[in-house]
Amino acid sequence: MNARTVSRVLASVLIFQLGIGALLVFGDMQLAAPRLPGLGPDAPRLSEPVRPGDQRRLFAPDRDRPSVQPLRNAGPLPDRLTLTRAEGVWRLEGAITAGDADRIITQIEDSAEAPQQLVLQSPGGAVDEALRLGRYLRARSIETAVLSGEICYSACPYLLAGGPTRDIETGASIGVHQHAFGENTFLPAFLAVEDIQRGQGEVMIYLSEMGIDPMVMSHALGTPADEIYILLPEQLERYGFVEAPQ
Image (cartoon, rainbow, N blue to C red; front, side):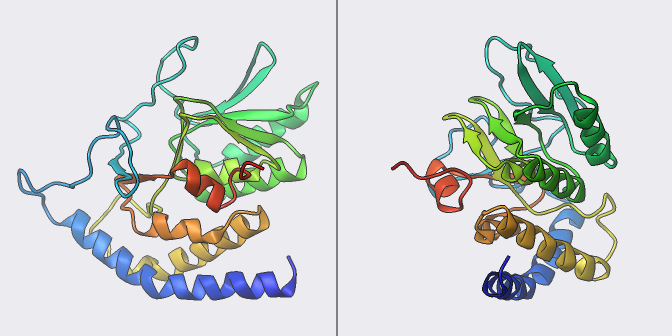
């Protein structure tokens, strides 16, 4: 990146940092407080249709499974990223966990014929692993795609961004939300603010490197970790995930 781009990204990071601490503290308070019957989240279930201005949906990876294309086996997604090849199509599916980037990179390097495109389907997971693997995909010029009826949520859009070209079919679902930072919601969020800010800055710089507008993170920061914000087709164009029609 040139100096102007770096300065613009860092300025954006500083602006977002002003709100991150408050968002994290508020999120911890919301999670730590017991929810009374009838007073749960207002977001509808993932199965409800998405409309402009109504894009937040409840999302729990162990509960909300995507609907897959009719010709594929509609089984559960793997607990960690799994690389497969069938009928010439390479797929990368499952949750993103610690060590997945190195493992998948090794599998690709050891393949007799490296993939030209990876079809992604993932509920998300470890952000640092997604960034590392995404940079590898870009360095190797491996394209990415998400098929109709399938999902790419949470950290998965960072993998998607790694492709030099990205094919997002009509009916594919791309979503973002706040990064989770621990199972124990009673730990003070203040202890995590510095690391979260640093990580958020790294994500925004990565997105800019990949040609994605870091402002897409404004939707992520405003969406709790137990919900997902579904990006509309026009937003995928606006933020640079897909090219606008000529």
